[in-house]
Length: 276
Image 1: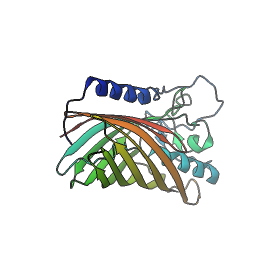
Image 2 (image 1 turned 30 degrees about the vertical axis):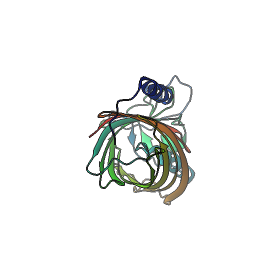
Image 3 (image 1 turned 180 degrees about the horizontal axis):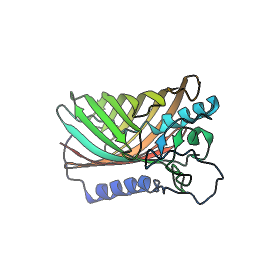
Image 4 (image 1 turned 120 degrees about the vertical axis):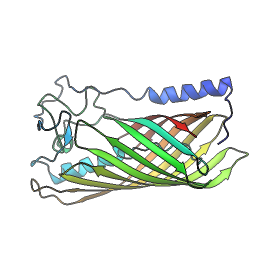
């Protein structure tokens, strides 16, 4: 990646694009204003909401939860279609925020427990937020390998993943790159459930100085199974699709990106990192 100093116009356009997507990501509060009369499942083992299956979880609720989760756990920023280059690294911290989820619905209430009967999974905005650590390395000039990780230290659940991105087409004069990306995401720390997800992406980006807008489509295959005697449910295997649009700005060693993913549950990510 060429480390050119961006022009004032490019730098300003980058900030406008990133701020526009970031504005779509309001923070969640850990309470509700009593807008839903639901009895929460409680468990004082954790100080935050934990992923625990309740005995009242139905097959339909489990399938609905799997569909919602498939969008949310696709949590690695797609980034520009460009690859890093051989022996180059990218380390970043991203924040993923969802569109409103129905945490008062059985599909969420019966797959989570709460510290008390007033502590909701998400706040009045009904949006879930997760911090995500990402690390990528350029294996060759055309192939990147990456790992991703998130964990709620106050609860039991987390996610980990691996991904590979391959640049199929590079038009350097036009600044256009087309890449394909494969990813795997798995669930950590939950005794009552297993979730495994595979993902295939097609990404296209075009470079305008330091600014690299990108778009893509993804196919997701998600498998969820309960691992507890509290219920007797069949494994849920769902196939979903996702569309992505975003922009990335690289300036010297700084990388900033923001993206929106359109899926069963829409998600929005903002990423800040360093590339070297």
